[in-house]
Image (cartoon, rainbow, N blue to C red):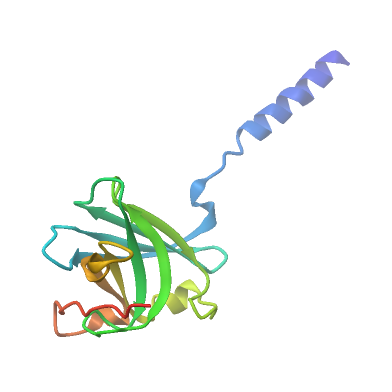
Amino acid sequence: MKSTIILWVLAGLVLFSCQKSDPLVEFTGNQVVYALLPGSTYSISGTALLKEKKDGSTQVVIELTGTSGDTKHPVHLHKGDLAEVGAPIAAMLTPVAGRTGKSTTDIFQLEDETKISYQEFIKMKACIKVHLAASGPSKDVILAAGNIGIAVANPGGRLAVGICRSN
């Protein structure tokens, strides 16, 4: 009887120890990477990785090189391409930490509370702009920026970076 109980306990331990949590489980595997190029005289560039989550939402991971310090750099998703002056903000993303150059944001809706799936997100005509500061004279300085979605297909090559609409 004792040996049967011990076998059941061991079988249970083996079964549960083999069930490892996989950090990729929340993602479908669909993803796209966009370049973020310097937007001013600062030598800051990087990428914006858009990953589809199993619930249909999008995780946006910004990774920049060239940032430093304790500053938090605001990140905006704008409707329209980089050249559009005053393009409306579609969503505020998590600020980039200066020390790491990273930001991660899960998006399932835009600023106007419109729901947006990953499939809709990657078909938007939009751009991402990383700002030097949230307020003051440096708020309009763009550290890095890039077109995403269908805005990438703009045949004109590198576009000028338009000034953001201040709220």
